[in-house]
Length: 199
Image 1 (cartoon, rainbow, N blue to C red):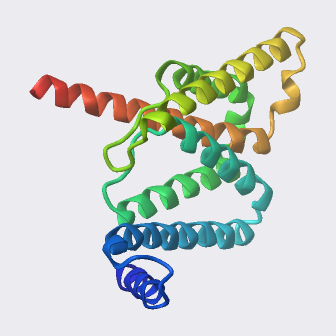
Image 2 (image 1 turned 90 degrees about the vertical axis):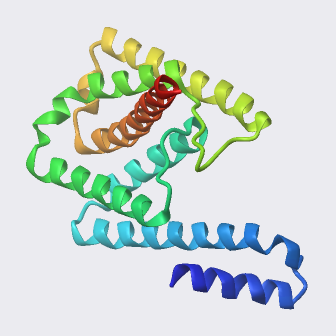
């Protein structure tokens, strides 16, 4: 259904001479991923309203999207798997917020571990979503710099003993998004090691 819709949009663009027909495969893929992304974000928006956790959801989406863009990491090989993984991750966040909020007291350490992993490993490009050489160099500088700044900032807050301000569900949602990116980097790194070991 999504693939068919993407092809129809591409054909319309070709008919109106907005794009060249020889580029139809590239645009099919672009429209397909855009549609999937819109559906996923719309679904999360509806769920955030239903669960009455709109602000937490925004913190999660912003932190995850920003770091995901510049850090890379594991990507599913098709949009169905990607959608299922995204939805499962989001529902896990809601479950923790609603039922296991005791973890909020660990926000500082959760955040720090994720940032250290990002600083050490990012960026990692996945075969399903590769970087250009220019993107890789730029993302490497941005991801490591941003992680370093946040690590230093949180260490200062810890030393000043004002980290208690961040023991809440909003900070956890932000940390959760960053830690998911860190986890995807670890998965990608492990996957590569297994492949190299086999070869």
